[in-house]
Every structure is written in C-alpha cells, then in structure tokens.
Length: 83
Image 1 (cartoon, rainbow, N blue to C red):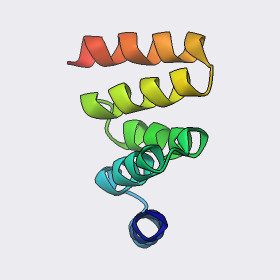
Image 2 (image 1 turned 180 degrees about the vertical axis):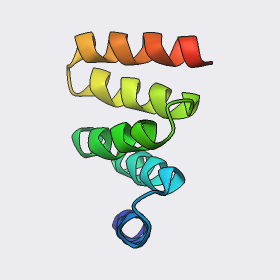
Image 3 (image 1 turned 135 degrees about the vertical axis):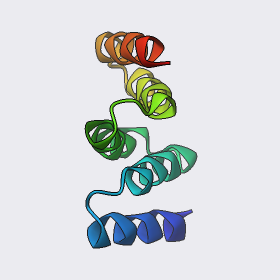
Image 4 (image 1 turned 90 degrees about the vertical axis):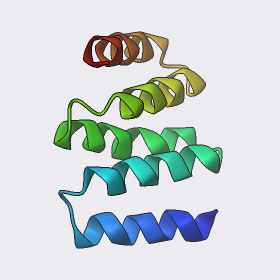
C-alpha cells in the first residue's frame, strides 16, 4: 500500500493540476487506514474539480473517521448538491 501512496505522491508532484492524482492519493491513504492523511489531497482534488462527486464522498468519510463530523456533514451536503 505504501508503494501506491508513493506512486501517487510522485504523480501529483509531477503534475500539480492533476485532480485524479490527488483523488487517487487520498483514496490510497484511506485504503491504508490513514484517514487523516487522506483529507488534504481530497480537498485539493475538489479545489481543482469542484464537480468531482466521488471525492466529496471519500472526503466526508475520512472526516467522519477522524471525528470531524461537522466538516463531514458540510462536505457530504455539498457533494449531494453536486451529484
């Protein structure tokens, strides 16, 4: 799993405008159980593409898992509007 994380880190370093790279990095962190680390790349993916509904879902999940339910509610409501 750490290899995937490193691969996606390199991807976003090489192309900082790649929302799929940030999304994939965030998902890899979640898959590795590193939910707190997933939040920043998922936020960046949404900054680059505010219509990326799956990123809202994963970000909301990560926020729930770290105990930030207020932020999760806001994120998931925004994602619902986009979807």
